[in-house]
Length: 121
Image (cartoon, rainbow, N blue to C red; front, top):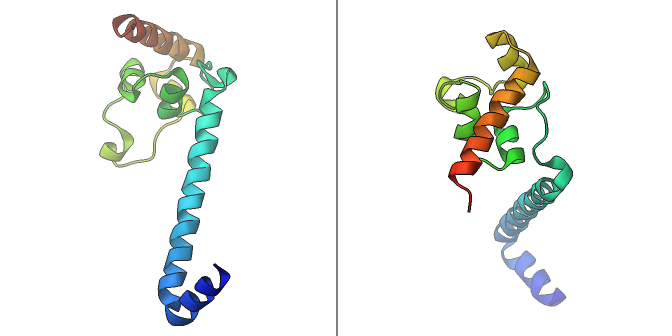
């Protein structure tokens, strides 16, 4: 095996380098996926109450609902990329709408509860 790698490095160094870089990228994204998967499977990270640093997409992942449910509950427009700016945090949304985080949490909880009732399996 080692001799095959040495031969490949000596005959095709550019291709070998590309393979190494591609493998490192794949490893990086695999680790990111696993970390995210493990984090979201922890029951302590489900249905978290809203905090100022959270973004709507994170809330949707935490509560296991489609992002549209949270975005509609927060009365936001199209997704951030379509608006042409960075995603808003819950603190930004509360300040813009003149409400507290507790009121936002109540609205999101109600929308999630309705969604879960409609899609209960």
